[in-house]
Image (cartoon, rainbow, N blue to C red; front, side, top):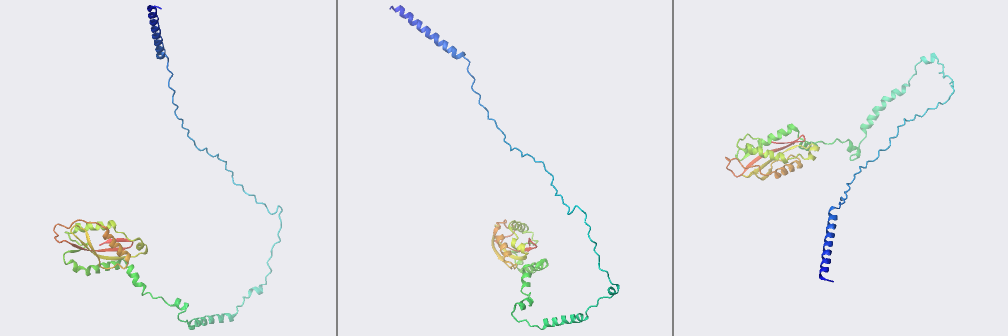
Length: 278
């Protein structure tokens, strides 16, 4: 074979290969592509309980009352016994002996009650013996003094401790001191924020007044609590001390006050399930 023939064959093979590739590329380019499959959206089904069938309401059946007898029966007529006018006109005579003896029986019974001795120490003697109220009255007056008694107690406490006020560094809470007016109002507001009437005392109606002397430093902190008197109930006194220990500083002293400590006498009053600071 000559070289020319080989060149022609090779050229023909190259051209055929090129046409084949071009045809395949054209087919792939112009062939319609299938659209991508659509994703199915989920279908939500609302399941609701089927209502129960409504049954028709049947009227209540009334039981028929049977008659005792279908036939009318004649009942014999009742007749009262015939009376006697002469006998009925006479009033019955009551026995007089019973009337005479009945009043005499009561004095004998009373005499028996009076003359019957009661053995000392017996259960009957303890029941008939009047209870002494002297031991109960002081406790009741102490725990339940009443509004008038509490006002008298407060006034007596003020007269008792008025000498301390004269020293100059002690005040009553409800004093008209202009210098410490703002300080005392801050203290009063702080007390009412944490002070409570004990529930047990309120339910039992326990009332009283607890006077205390409170010492403050210049920062308004409570440094000492002195209970001057007892209200008569430990639960009330303990609540006052707890309240004073729970409050924080109430602010500094007025600028014109040069001492390092300030003393305050306050009356914590419990009465009628209410509390009052005076």
